[in-house]
Image (cartoon, protein in one colour):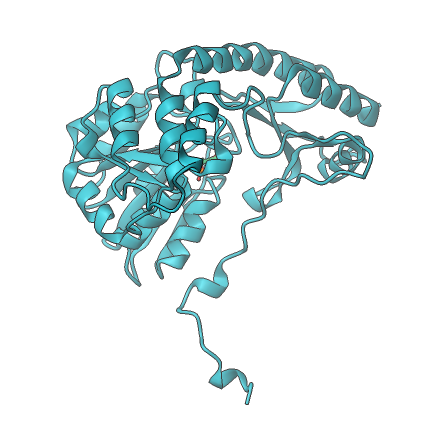
Length: 366
Ligand SMILES: *Cc1c(COP(=O)(O)O)cnc(C)c1O
C-alpha cells in the first residue's frame, strides 16, 4: 500500500527546498563552546527584556494579544513610525515567508542575489513560485543585474542590506536607483536585519523609502543586536495596503506573549543598544585586521560578522579550519550553501571568543 503513487505529494517546489542548516553549536565534550556561527549577540539581551518575561510566566494560560499592539507601539515610538504600518512576526523569517505567501503564486518569480540570505529561496519555493538568482559583483548585490532579471512574472525582489553572509551593503542611492527602475507592482523587500550595526554615512535602513512609496517594505529583527534570537521576534514597516494583506495571511497569534513583552522592553533600552554597538565597532575592526595579518582575505563587512576566504590551491582550507577550530571549541559557520565552498563566516563575539578563535586560527594557518 505504500506505492509512492498513493502517498501524499507536496506541491511543486517543496522537494526542491534544501533544508536550512543552522549554525552548529556542538563541540567535543569537556571543551568550552564559543558559538560564532549564527551572528548572535555576545552582549546578550537587555536586563529589562529579561525582567519583562517574568510578568508573562504568571499568566501563560492566556492567549497573547493577536495584534502585538504593545510591541508595535514600542517600535513605532522608538523609530518615529505609525504603529499601523508595522507588522510583527515570529522572527523576521516568518515575515519573509508571509511576503512570499501573500505576493507569489505558482509561475511568479522572485529575484534575489547569488550570495543572498537562504531564507529567500526557501520562502519562494514554499510559495510554489520560481527563484531567479542573479550574479553579484565582488560579493555585493548588483542593481543592474537585478533590473536585467525583471520579467512580467516578477513579483518580489528580496535584498538584504547589509547582506548575510557577505557583510556588504548598498548605499541608499543604489537602492533608490533599483526601486525607481522597478515596475510599480513589484514588491521591493529590504531586509535590514543588521541595520543597527552599520556605521556609514551613505547607508539607510529603508524607512524613508517605505514612507515615500507603495511597493517597498523593510524587515527588521530582534535576533541580532537585541540578543533575543531565542524568542523569535521580527517586524516589518510597510505601506498600509501591504500590512493589511500580510495581516490576513499570518497566524492569528503569531507572536507569543514572552516575545511581545521582552521585545517592547528591549527596544526602549538605548543604553544596552549603545553598549552592543560600541563592542561591535571595536571588534569588527580588530578581528578584520587580525584575520588579514594571517594572510586571509576578508570581505569588508559593516555587520556583526566577517566572511573569511581561505587561499586557493592550498592545504589550508575552510573545511580544515572549521574542523580544527571546532575541536578547540570555536564554532564558525561553513557557507558552502551560500556559494562559498572555501570560506567561513565568523560572528563578532566576546573579547575572549574573538581572541581565542584568532589564536586557534593562527595555529592552524602556520
Ligand atoms: C539573521 C537574519 C534574519 C533574522 O532572522 P530572524 O527570523 O528574525 O531571527 C533576517 N535576515 C537576515 C539576512 C539575517 O541574517
